[in-house]
Structures are given as C-alpha cells and as structure tokens.
Image (cartoon, rainbow, N blue to C red; front, side):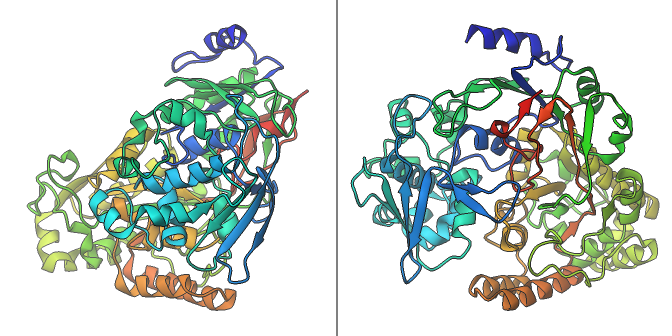
Length: 582
C-alpha cells in the first residue's frame, strides 16, 4: 500500500504532468473526463464510471473481446433457458473471491440484481435496461409512491432466486417475456455482482423486505458504495480523488493475476497536457477526442496510433429540451419569448427544430475536425446496427431554408422578437463544443436578434444540469450498452427512454413504431420499422445526429495485448487485465 501511495503522489499532479516516466509495473491512462460519477454499479451509467467498474467488478457473462456481440462465461460458467424463454438458469463459478476475501455465491447475484431494482435510480441503468423484463414496467424511483403502486416486494423477490439456497452456485432469473438480447444486456456493468456481505456490513441496503421501500429512488451517491468497492475483478480500488483513480492488481483473481500490478487513471482536461505526457512516457494511453489533435502525435517516438477499420458503437447528438424548467434558470434568460430569453416549450415548434437543423454544417466538421476521416449520420444510431437507413435525407447547412423555418416559427413572432439562450456541452470535449459553436455562428449571422451562448461544464455537473431539465439544448452522446438498435432508438426517442428525463421527448408517430419494434423478434420486420423511424426523424427533427469520425486509439509502444472493442465502457476500449508492458 505504501508503495502505491508513493506512486500516487508522484504521478498525480493537479492539472499537470507526472514527474517521471510511468514505471514498468504501472499502467497510466490519462482521460479527458472529470472522473466517474459513481463507483456503485446500480448508479453509474456513464463511460467514465463504466471504464473503472468493468475492471473492478464482473458480470455473469462478458464480451468475447474484441467482438461486440459474442459472449463468454465470466462469473457464470454456463446457462440454460426454459422452454417458454422466461427463466434463465446460470451455473456460477466455484471458489470466486471478492476483494474483501468473501466468497461469491448465489446470494451475491440475488442481492446485486435486487438492489438495482429496489433503488430503481432514474439515473442508473437497471430499471431502464431490465425493469421491463423483470417487473413488467420501466417505472423508476423518481416517484417512490408511483413505483410502489406498480412494483411489489414479491415481484422483486421473485425476479431472482437461489434454487440451491443462498450459498449455492445456481441462480434463476425470471423475466416476463422472452428476450433474445438478455445475455447482451446482462454483460453491462450495471449488472455487476456486488459483495453483499461487504455492502450490508457497511450500511448499504440490507437486502430485506423490511427496508426495501426506504431505498426506492435513494441518492446512492451519498452511500458507502459510491466510493468503495469489493468486486471480483482483476483489479481492486485503492484511492479515488478529483485528480485520479488508483487501482492495484488483485492477486487472488479467479482468472489468474494480471500482468500489470498498478493502474493510475488521471483526469486531465487539457489535450496538450495529455499529448506531452504520452510523448514523454509519463502516460501509456491517452484520450484524444478530436482527430485533429493526432497531427501532434504522428511520428512521435514511442507512440502508436491504431487506425483503420475499427468498429463504431457510439453516436453524438444535439438534443432539444421540450419542457425546459425555466425556474431560476440562467440558461433561458427571461424565460419568455420577448427577445431576451426563451419559454420552456421553445423547441416544441417543429419550425424551430428544422431551422436549427439547417444551421449545422456536417461537412465542415468532417473536413476540419475529423480531417476528412468521418461520415454523415442519417439517423441516431450507429451505421453498423440493424435497421440503419442510409437513404434518409440529411438537413445540413442551408441559410435560406433556416430563415424560412424561423420566420414561420411561433406564427412569425420569433423572427421579429428574437431570442437568447445557452447551450451546454461537457468541458474538454471540443468536438461537441465545436458543433454547438457552428450552430451559434450561423444562427447569429442569420438574424442579429438571435443569440445563442455556448458553455462547458465538468462532466458530473453537466450530467446533473441536464438531468434537472434546465438545459435548453445540449450536445451529448451514447455508447452502446449492447449491440441492438433499441439501445439507441429507445434511449434517445422513447418517451420512457433514458434521455426522456433530460428532454421530455414525446413524438406519438415515432413512439408507435418503437412499440411495434419492441414487440417482435423477427430481424427483417424490426429493420423495416427502424428504417421508418429514420424517415420520421428527418421530418420531425426530434434530435440532431452529429457526424461521426473514424475510430482510432493512441497508446504507448510499450503496451502489448492492445485491442479495440467499442462496446467496452472505457474510451481506451480494452480491459486492463489483457495488457502488459515490454
């Protein structure tokens, strides 16, 4: 421990560089994020958190890296499915140790999944990804009384069972209807197996019916598992501060000790700082969100840039908020359509949305930001997924069309009065910042009465602000939890989807097609419905998909075993246990 804390002191300098080259027994990764939102699997639903969790915790099955849709046993060794498709039985791995020294059994799987259902946190993934399957509802803990009106303890208790007893190695998952995507969903970090004894002894939910209602919608970021972890993964948590997270190898890992002893993830906002760190050997891998920054790295001794045909499972969008909370909200100005602000329903006018769509220059982003290595996205899902429609038209920069739509908005009142508001992005992501600033520039050129401010917030503050529905317009993305179109279409556009809590999106025409696609399993039928959704997205403009850049990865040539799996939560797209240093 002392050695590791010394390493921490040497490597973590607030906003600056490490003091010495990363040691041979340590993997140093510099991320542009501001760090995890949470280390509690049932609360974390962002890439910064997931990139840590997938190395500390484990799920029943995991991805067969680098494949995005092939799975191999992890904490389970096999599974079977009942004839009616509603009971999945998993045989658990024997002798698996948690970081605390406790031994994993069925009770831990049962506790982990039930804990997620009990908390039902609206900013977590459990209710969103599995509430419908386990409980028949996507209700969450944002309304505890409403949740209890739909969900009983008997439903939660019956969702996960231990047929051989709590200390047995068999677990049954009972779902309401067959779901061919279940294994893929369960591989996501939200369904990590938590050390139940460790959690309960330290004040987390005690796993009983007597207390379950006390935890519905609870702010678990104030609880023990927010900053403490006992997983079964190949690495265990040492320390997490605002500047960095430190982990060390778990030598009793069931899969064998990992090659690298220590991991330090530094949170460094400035790209120039990260670039210098890998060039000097102070970092072994860095985030480079903008392709234009690669020019500073090409040809650098010791730096490897992986490029080529790397798969993509993420997408960025500009989102509109259809029911902005204007109370005490600096981002909406006056909160009225009086030239000094916008009302809460500003983006419900389709002419406003179409006008904004014609202010964005897709090709400019591809040429200037992606150095020509990108492509226009026709609908809000990755091009490689089932149902992507490449033939959908794309609204791009057309100032005449934009003026036409803005003049028609709000019965002509908008053009005459003007407006002002602020759009947000996460600080450090210049791609999203640039997208908003392109819109701002064209908007203010079009009509001097139109004013749009752009500002960035630290990651956790940005998520919190959008979660409060106070952000009128914002740029944000989504990385796939699993390789299926509903993970994007439902997430962005379903009125019960994850982003509905930030945007209040509600388009009946689109919702009807989503509901149909959710109710069938035939791939051809589903593909047709998703292509129809793409056409409606063009017409109604509920969201603005941004162009995507060709993928790449920047690492040190000292690393061996590097691969690229975009389904992994971390921006480096590989697990720490799979790499070594020469």
